[in-house]
Amino acid sequence: MSAQDQTLNSHGDGHSHDHHEEDMGPHATLGGYLTGFVLSVFLTAVPFWLVMGHVFERSSTTAVAILLIGAVQIVVHMIYFLHMNAKSEGGWNMLSLMFTLVLVVITLTGSLWVMYHLNTNMMPHMRPPTDTGAVILPPRAP
Image 1 (cartoon, rainbow, N blue to C red):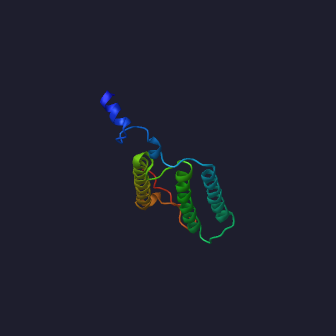
Image 2 (image 1 turned 180 degrees about the horizontal axis):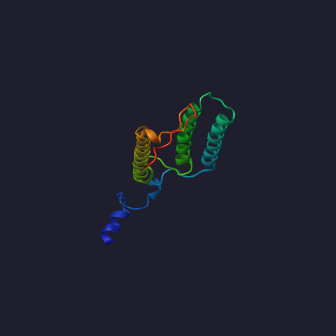
Image 3 (image 1 turned 120 degrees about the horizontal axis):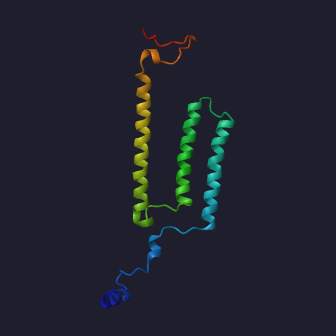
């Protein structure tokens, strides 16, 4: 660093590296960790109660509720334990999170789409057994 740069920085031109604290995001506090812990325990106990108490008649409703609670728990962990927000690391953390979420959604959607179409386009002799109990065997080779 030249003498001129040192002079400019010592006069507070805004280019000094003394203000890193602003860009670091929220600081960890005991209250923040306790809030995250209580929310995490609650968001873990509720799905357990939903399953063990047979709260919903349909298992698909229970599964959707558990998935939604899991998504909320991910957000709680990111905010209270990973200290992620739109301002931390100049917004790069949030951008990388959004990119990761897009990749996960594409991967899961594509996987489900492929598995669904593989199941619906199976050859007739490869279908699972019917409700009548009869098992359909593949034809024998001549």
